[in-house]
Length: 316
Length: 287
Image (cartoon, rainbow over all chains, first blue to last red):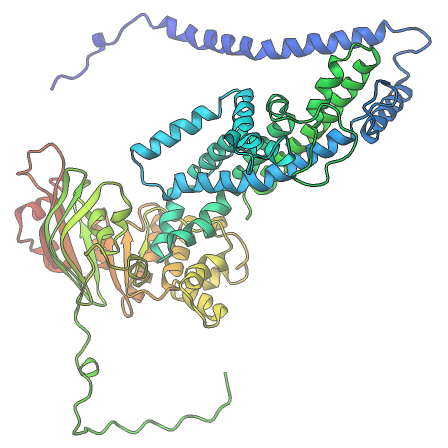
């Protein structure tokens, strides 16, 4: 056995003292890129406000806010989608999106969570499992328009079988969006289950618990915050999707609210898209108002996700 | 205390001409667990070779030996926890109360209720202290008074006085030693016959260790305990019988295989080891 002598260590070690700070700087620059874009965006808005007409000074906040609030309320309450931007509104789209949201939650969450539990807790590791696993991971990255085409062939037309084809109904949209968020829910469920320490499972098994008792008594409650967070994030992706809904036939303009899952429907992002394409300048304001409503809905859902995660982090 | 009148003394049993059922006359089998020619593989690697051992009832049996010699593997074979490890398989025979438990079609769930386990790292459930103890009993269909069971189990685990005023607090708020006693209480609550302990004190400080050791001594009146330990002093202090496992030197296949070097009463094994390797191990020359 030879013992390492001092000459075995290299002398010039200065470069490793520099590498750390350099790497840190590179990472910091990467972080700043996002911040800089955001700052430019906000700066341009502020600049536009400052250079506004003098009769409407920038510090007259409350008047402008109440004006904006009035616009949004009008947009949210009006069902009109006529050629007149002053009476156009999003009520049908908002209600349609809420229908979609509720039904996607009912369809997508149980299936996704159950699939995640099966893959993580029941399936034996092997080729089939890793094949499914790889596919799910890839599906999470598939562009949403592809799901739209899939939904069109599978649900709307049912490959030409008229008896089971759903047509451009709310249900077809729900199933398409459920497919879209399924991989996200499955992956986050698996991630949450994997974070449950193995010692907890062993403790329960050692007491004579069946697999069902282990999963329902300990594993799922421990993983619940993670599962719920992932689920809500998946739902907020579903509510913002436009492309697949256009494919499966969400109506461009609709004057009445959907009355059931088999009725025709439209969704908020689809309506925004429709208004944004119209040439009349007034509709730009309408579309912008719709975007604000959509952003508010998304932020609310993400806030709920954060609250749930913090609330249930330790206690269940 | 109830104020019912004292029961009359039971009259002494008169010898009768009839032969009572065999199960009443025969004393309980002194051997609880017995292994014959047990071999365990992980994948293709042989982890344990030809283990034959008889675990006596109401005594503490210690399993000692160097790292990687398969002490924990042997322990986990007794309640079939080893089956949870991917690629683990075993061969040979294990009997529990005379009944073969090494077959593929035994009811592992009810076996694990009868043979409880305490793990190396205290692993209480992230629930209240009360529910930590009650959960195992509940899932096993306990129908008696849960409060009584919880108190009795915590008393038996010498933890009641420390936690009786905070039963609704999380089990994770306790200290390491208390957590381990909570895990013991949880195991006792399902009324096992054997308790397997896998290095239960290795994560504890000396005072907590001493408390757990005292507790084990109390428990052996009613339970059979098998303990894996790295600490030879501990084996010497608490156990009645000691099994010393060793690595098989003749194995040349590149993985470690454990064999049973010696199994004898603890005081004999430590004062007068028959096996050369055991002697080398307990005197600190190897391992």
